[in-house]
Figure 1 (cartoon, rainbow, N blue to C red):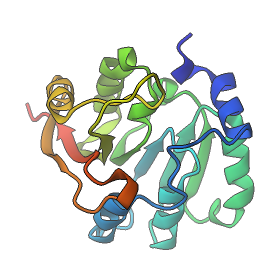
Figure 2 (figure 1 turned 180 degrees about the vertical axis):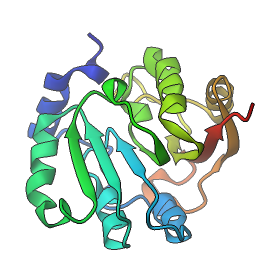
Figure 3 (figure 1 turned 135 degrees about the horizontal axis):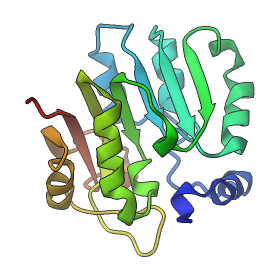
Figure 4 (figure 1 turned 180 degrees about the horizontal axis):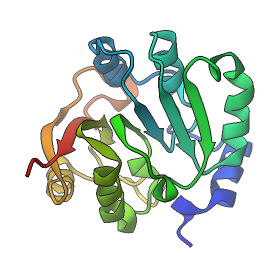
Length: 198
């Protein structure tokens, strides 16, 4: 089993607080994107949501249908306690393997999930995203635009991402982030992709 789909591996990472990728706050590029969305009823998925600052922010902004899927029972239980007040106000928390999740969404938020997956799973990720998106749905998020030694996280380049995503999706935007936090300046790319139109 690849570590990226191994519940024990991720439970241990969260128990030992080995989460160096965790910003401790909503990602500024995603916050800026959320702030221009007007339809608060969008059905939103955050896969591999981890500590889910984005989910908290969305609920606080009045979004009414936000689902977090994470394979770690440790982090999901932590979220159930931390965000207990939001669970009957539009937030749903699922301890589940992303690849076993099958629903349709208007918006899927990518925030450090893609980089946590073993790169050999990236084609499966793209195919599964295509299945989870509604016809007009969008995959929106932040990707590391740099390489790492070892992993996770696993990095890559905008050119490689474009080639990969375009096997199943239409890439509308794939540009350097202009509003990353200082330690990540110049090393993040913002992507917006949708289903290819027949």
